[in-house]
Image (cartoon, rainbow, N blue to C red; front, side, top):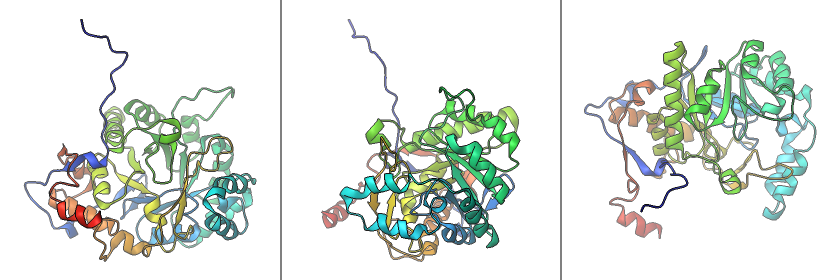
Length: 380
């Protein structure tokens, strides 16, 4: 007699377990179109810089926008708590490992200054760059109003896990459909990893979804809470929700894979899984222009009671332009991400990102090690 099962876990896949199948035709990479469109904005580089204090300050936001991408400034970070955040960044970078978390908990306990929100946004806008900012759901109503008045272009409402229905003691929490009516600007919401959660969020009228719970190099949510879904499966499930919503309404909601991308190969797989753009964290923290100067830390790290992040040393490897566009002599896929994406489109026979969604994928756990005997010996 078979033993009854309490539950049957579903198989989920990460970037290391799949591979893209080349196309029957190939296209010159220079003739591919990788534009990312979000509402009225079009970005030639489909890459967003994560709303992390070690990555995005006004100067970095201006720079990446000049290179065709978009940076998201954290409105609840050091830039809006301190007149001179560089001094606090120095403290964090120089702190011994054992003292980092208590220090982060301390410096992030300072109140957010609304005047600094306006100043940081204006610094980005006055340089002619598109300005995107990030807030947590708990502070969205208050801070989004301040940001909107300052002229922000794009609002990102982001937490470890965000849903359209949140149960709490609060009489009336954040309702995205009402926020949509209050603000006449694109709204991105994250993070989620499932078809049902993504579809329900899309039905509130938002413009984009951030996909990923815990895959970031500086995030420890999966270790602390045991929560998350590998990014290949998570992206495909949320992309399926996008297609369902598109059929229902005719509105196309952007899917942005956030976290877990280490190499150009990972980035290309994210697009094949259905992503319209990707959000990068620790990769961009390696840029010489990043304010963390070779370090990065998760934005849940300063939590006063249950930190879910860690400071990681990523080192300053190259200027941002080289990381995104090359040229590079690095052979591990950690530079020239745009070149990798265009080449992948070309060899898969796809002319644009929407076509890339159609690329055939196979389950291939040995894709990175097959035939790599000599590389394995050299790295041992």
